[in-house]
Length: 250
Image (cartoon, rainbow, N blue to C red; front, side, top):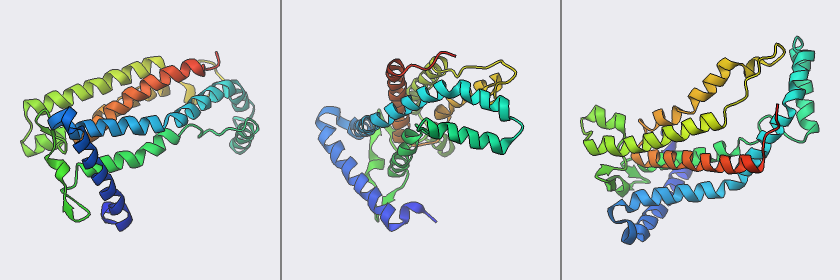
């Protein structure tokens, strides 16, 4: 079953389509043929600006977790062999501190519907029963509905395809590497430290920073623009908020 054909979802998608087309028309005098791409960029910035309060909440949550880390390690040392008791004491600690181990997840959850809508707007030839004119829009000659993998499979990839996607993927990779270096999780070498704080897991977390670049190979160009803009915004925002909410020194 196609979820985008479900009437309420189709109505939301059609409203997003209309809004994006109108925004592209407004930007056309300034952006010319790249108006649709510029509208995707502007929508991304607006979404990220709306999520700034959630980003502040996430930074506060990271600061709280860093402050609670010694207490959590003490609980692991004391109740490590009693998983049920460890879970109860851990949740009690979070409750006493008026926080949650899942605090700060809102930015990721809030973006999921937006990414799904952007993907659908440039992946479906028809929206709510009418032709999708967004698929005729391009950026430097590359259709906003084209993907690297799809273009290669269809034999339609051009030098412009590799150039445009190449720039976006390089931006994503650079932002991911800076994020990995700047926000590397501390590696605990103590015997009583949690296995989740080990060097292997720290390396795995670093590798996950680059999954967005891989995803950008498979999604339409419009979605890749959204992803590249998002990772750059997120990096800058985290740097600013980390200075405002520094982590506890281990």
